Image (cartoon, rainbow, N blue to C red):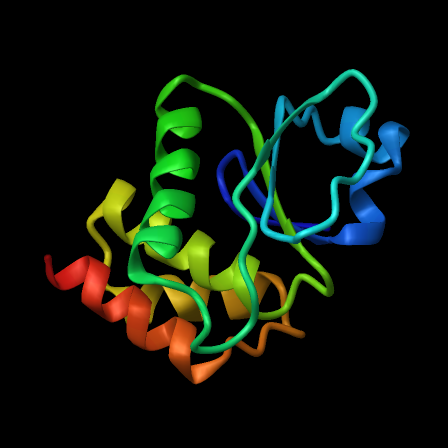
Length: 135
């Protein structure tokens, strides 16, 4: 699990079930981008099921970004996770960071990659991020 912006973390599905890890990082909310329903213990989980690649609607991607932004604006520390924490969660995080801070999407992706080097977003998710930022 890596903090990619103040209070915004990215992780893999395996991180979600480690309650001590979540508490150590003061995670308040887990936003799950998988189709499974991982046990987050006492920590609130918000499910926004997505798939890697072009199968996601723009509405689903936008919904995930909106959930991150809502929780962040409520001063919640957020873990966004997908299966490996390398494609869906970094794409959603970078898009939310852009919307929250005003930095460019390229800068946001670079920040995410710098802080989570195994980031490898699917091209279709990057295209969706660009569309959302342009609207």
